[in-house]
Length: 153
Length: 259
Length: 107
Image (cartoon, each protein chain N blue to C red):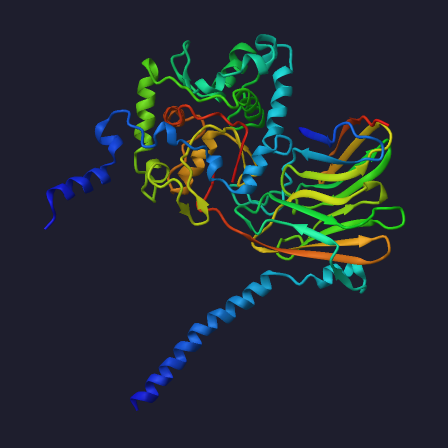
């Protein structure tokens, strides 16, 4: 009798511990949006390859308001072979499309540096559209920490 | 049984040496002073070190335009800021001989605008005041802070020190508890600095704009759930004088970048 | 509003790739902040930015609230003839602004 009661209690305890973990995974998945539909609007079904694009973002930002970002694409930037545009996407910001940069052969180098706002820990994706119709991407995860003290100044 | 010596030790530690003695002991020795930038992340340091892309330089630039603008411009009396304003910020807050008041650098600029330039008054924390303050303080970049706490400044210094050691707010702590006793340690994800005034006005990424030391003190007050005194409150000036004394010799970094 | 422009290197040779750095004072209001009484502060961001080199567009960007306040933009162009770089941008309120910088190219 006593052994059954204890097993039942332990089983109960296990499910109580497991449940919040399941909840939090679900909740986090809802906070981070899938990017395929957004990228798809640009690529129209053409597969996106990884490589050639390097997205530089710090692994940790102590404030999400001004994070330095660099994106570069390997390309000769010639008249016949160049990067037409680079697009930045966030899977967590209220606005998914962060910026579009339009280049061309006169750029000489396909490299952009800017500072971005990140509404929390997430993955940022850079998509490059090349003159030959191909699409290339890179993603970078980043942890964004919050302020220790409330600032209502 | 507690030994008498232990009781004395504990009592002294709790009282805090500065208050009991009433003298001018420094909790942080002059040789141990470190600017807030030393406790900032690599990314914040990179933002401050690059003069071109330091966002606070936008205010310095705007300040340079305001300096030269108008019939009775700052330049009409002071000439080039690079020459005439060199070293000025190291001496503030300072007693104004005319009124006997303790003025911050921003107060002095406001006073000049209203009384000597006949221009509309600059509002606290306005873009124009921040720009002019940033321009003037920037001319002292690299120079050591050296304020006077003698004569009429003395009571202000003492009031500022008393504030620094006074427990306030719902969190019921004093400035000293973080910035004297726990600098260098982490508070959640942040590293506590020594709390020096040497880089103001700063660009604070939290604010997404430039701000004065008054704003930063208000932010601290809100952080410990204390009432934020209004801009222009004499308590801020007194405290700023104490902080400047406490940071004596630390080079000015204006315009700074902080988290 | 203040604008800072830097061409690196400042005196390029013809054919050399230069980096153009631009820093614009603009608070890039996201539209997600609230004021002291709970009202939403309306969005006002620079939404388009372009750079013309002697009249020809060499760079363009669509920006959003995802770009930080006081936006920094760094991009490249090939130094060709000496002349003028013209930067123009517009924000959500329709306010247009521009800035010019000389580019001196040696042969």
